[in-house]
Length: 304
Image (cartoon, rainbow, N blue to C red):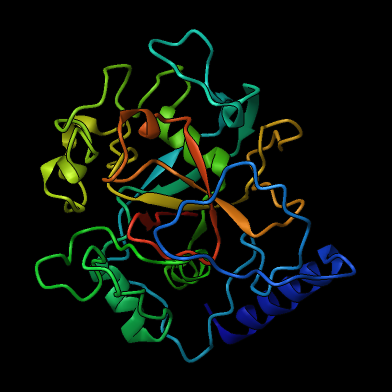
């Protein structure tokens, strides 16, 4: 991408921010890493101090964008699907935040086959496109020998968006993520309706991380792949998406775009983590996290 194009992106992004910004603002203040944020946030609208998640991140013109080995992607064809927890589905345990089920018509898009790895993140840091993640926990994967192919974790939403921009991509919308994970056939999990086990996903089956207490290398559970070959759409790490959190789908976009109004301090992550039990890694399950959090359970995969 040339500098003129990047400059145009920046101008367009600033114009969008000015158009959408409310007349008053409040701090996006963080929370302690590792502390889950209640789903029903009830937060007032605020002006984010970082670019809105559907706008390109401001990548400095001197930064060399990723062009080689930037992570394999799969194409999800255009079409409608039923988003949300389907009442009566085998063993479903719908949360109010997963309702109402609604039809979303999603344009075609590409999505990363795997979660972004620690190795790829290191390349982004080396190129100046990313900042190093939090490394305060021994569960963080960045810079740890032997964990180069584990999913990057301990990253905030801002860091996730910056990485995707460096990679020539963007954060997925929540609708894109769910369609990629569950397809159009109403299955409960990425692989089908079979209950999760450590054969299918990296989860807490009585012990976190299938007994290891940590993440696995991406793609370690091929039996749990989606029919299109996407890996770890359940378990391993939660994946930041572009949407701000809303307590239900009432009023959600029906065109597959990210839900950005109103902006709050809380953003959606999908897929569950190695520290979550089977009920938390259902394909329709969703969680809200303070967008400044950078816990060991938070990672990303990108869309385009």
